[in-house]
Length: 295
Image 1: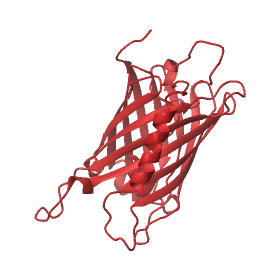
Image 2: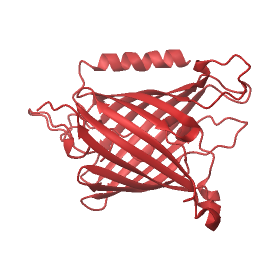
Image 3: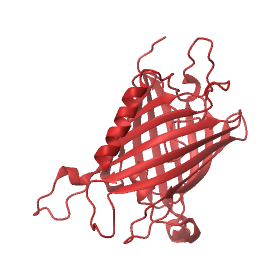
Image 4: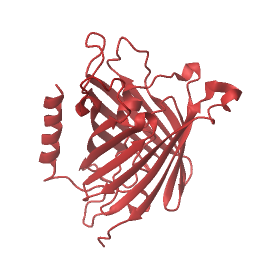
């Protein structure tokens, strides 16, 4: 199943390169191609809505350095200072290879996880009705690097790997409101119990951005899982927060029930519930650097 799905995504990406319009970028570096066609700018203000990828790409030759931080859950009460005693962190580096393609690398201290992704812009919304949506595809892999629980057995590197494939479909309805939907597949190479779990997990995510001032917006994202494993109590990822634009970077403050910050983690492994106080305060801070100028 995974090989077939991955092949479909790859062929889709390859076929699209001949007619893709362009990519968008972060903050004021959003690409604006010359010509008669005018494209919508800043559907979202960063390359992430909160946890999820947004439709935005880093501009060609630009490096986005991002630090994501999640504190412990607030249900720890005063003993943990409502989660502030505990923390997890992830560092991301995203780079724009071309006007359509960006790559990313990340490392999280949760399960000492490394992840990489490739993101390609297929369609870009225009200011007229010529193209009503923007569309991108993202594919990536992650690997935890914890020590093997049983070093004496035959352990394989491939057992640590998981993959995700995602389609991002977004529309900027007006100057203040943008909406994005995200059908997603997550694949595990290895699972513990074939009768109670499945290698392939399917999700449908939705996210939106609502501006409340020139530099501040409210962000929301929710992901529904179609096939939760029967031997685990897991929850759908739900996050709300604010984007604060301050010159060359975007500062994101949010609350989420997902402590893990890579796709496999927050999509398929969220183990806490908002209704039970499993809420984590966190932030993302992003700074962009022009590595190579193409002006």
